[in-house]
Length: 325
Ligand code: ZN
Image (cartoon, rainbow, N blue to C red; front, side, top):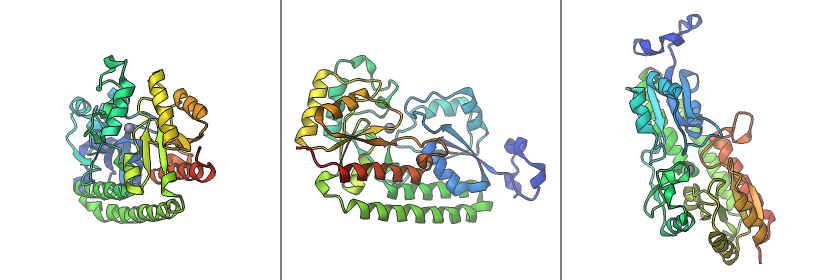
């Protein structure tokens, strides 16, 4: 208990709760992790999130306020796999001395395939000056072999995340270890239940109909885990409109692969994707969440809710739309 009375958090001490130790001060890098941390930390933590709901983690620019929150934190939870490219600089600025928990530790990293890299290359033709370290999705790097950071799109990886987070919180705050592990157990149970249910629903969809065509290459783990073919129209986003040649190539792909639906990503309007769907005569499915949760009050305001939402958009498009021919 004494170990919890750290000077750093003293401003937050509440005189009314003398019996309760101060909450562990935790910062999560982005909204999806923040929800997981909240599920496991419960009332035992004080949580700040750097990239909040409906904000883009790729183009995030930390503020002095973020540096202050991090400077006061005892634990930082990050995704890893190269997702938070802006973190090293922020850590320096914040003078963070706490414990860093890499939520993805132990998951099998997925690398971008040759085809994904090629698609990206094509779409980047003509704006070479963008560079891969520029803001936007280039943050991932699109070279074949580059690590795909979006591991949370596989619920089994979500389980691994939850276990890593619980272990990290427990190590930073051993007095409340059992509370963290108990919550993590209950949460993992929910994640596994959702995984089973989703697999059961998927089994009703013929494998050749399970194609997810969208703009941002964020669903590779989903595809690999659940037998969904992913066609990422990389570069087809609100900010980088594809050339006429790229559009023609995409149209051909949609037709030859008999793709029945295209899916928008939350937060990106992508007129190009709408135009493609129109020209190809395919359904434009509901918008999927890739890197962010929605604001409180929406179904996708939690990791589980987000996963379920995405699954529902996919299932309903696959079930209602006959394959184009
Ligand atoms: Zn992403």
